[in-house]
Image (cartoon, rainbow, N blue to C red):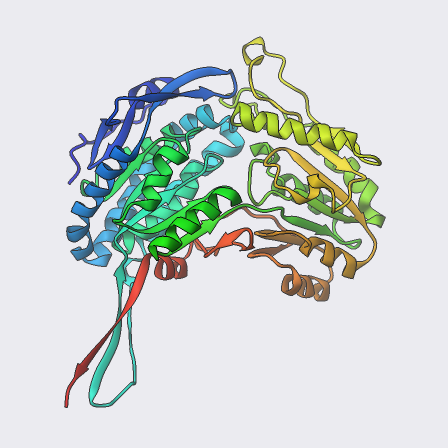
Length: 501
């Protein structure tokens, strides 16, 4: 079992917790410094101050983590699947006890509001481990009626060491959807966290290491070229699961292809939301608030950043949407009154501001800026951006075609159903889409024709365990969050034949 002392008591001071975790990776059940001893700053985006220093992972650290995972793999694979599931479910129980601690820590490092975003994510983290922990008994094979004189059957076997690379926007949730099924399936895991948000996921793994055997779960912090690339290329890594940008996803895919190993990619989106003329206006506006993830500053790959509204509802929709977003409070992510936090990093801040400036220069477009920047002097250096609703923008503009990953959406007027379906599908992405209508025929037709991995009618729910999640086109390869995903992406099927003649 792990060498970490148990039990770990919840630590509700995120600054103290970040200091405790600074400079560390989790390898072989222990918190250890980088092989080089190097660290890098992690900045609180709400105040522009250094909140801690993360371990600077490089190839030597990858080698150590993979070696620990390989060493733990033999015993972990041999453990009965339901026992692995029991331990993973126990991780969920422990994480539930630390929900508030993890929520406060992820709010501090990502700038996501505690009340509206971070507590929700911490809850989904625990739920994912509980859900997948119950699926250990579903790692079943099948008998095959090949020949009456032969017993022919299949069994599911783990792949080996899984390399999991996670993003910063919902780091805990997306880590859970990768490592929980991988562990239950009998694999061992090495995680590479996002450099902007390394602490909450490290703490979550430290908590889980109390019940998981040492080396089964390892996590490194670092940058893509120095840490992520060696992990993907490592000869002992048998599977890579990655969430991030399309550009990086292509690099990951090429490396995995050279090694002839499977890869799962979730690469983002430009999700259309279609509001028909017969839609419930209030319901659609509320759906746009949720769908655009304004409380996450639009930093979501499923964000409804293209909202097509029928001409008969367009003006009323824009007025109502702006009023709702205006009423949202922007402020310190750790303040219970805050609805909207910050952008995660200066680089992302500059990128978002660049898109907004370009939109304001676009002929015929109008920028409806919403909410208000915080006035607290302590937040003066924070990365706050007012949400912007653009009207008068066309679907061929850069703001409607590229993933901004910020609180920016384009409301596009339409009159013809066939035309709006064509516009919605006219994108390199295909992650998610929604249709808002009271007409069942229209709803069913749209769900069949919209090119997306997740299509919803009159709602815009976020990703949750047991709902298949993954896109088409440039939005990625493979699905996550379900039993099917666990079987298809974290096991291989072995055929066994016994000659009884």
